[in-house]
Length: 152
Image (cartoon, rainbow, N blue to C red):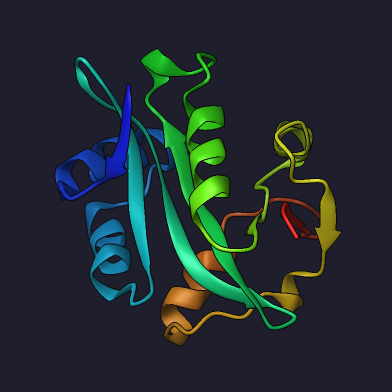
């Protein structure tokens, strides 16, 4: 297994659509308009298995990465792919990682992987357009959305 930047948009589209059902146009809009972020993926013998976007952000003046569109191909789920990506990102992306879990089961999933500090979503600051910032805060079905943070 190797973790590297994802440069093939077709890889991103394939996994993102399978996981979230978004249109190619919406995915490409995000990819083409994200200014301060990138996508990393976990690759195996048969190609990409899992990916996530890491978007530059600040919380209380500290720089870190916001995890967005974290997803794994169905055939590779429950095999540790996302845990490996999160571990890599934690070691390589500034002072912290943060994210907004989409639903209740994901809160426990991420807490087991070191995202134990609950923070207000309003404390996360991006240097992105309003449209991209809106994307980053979408997709949460929690009654009261929260953000989770690891690191310092």
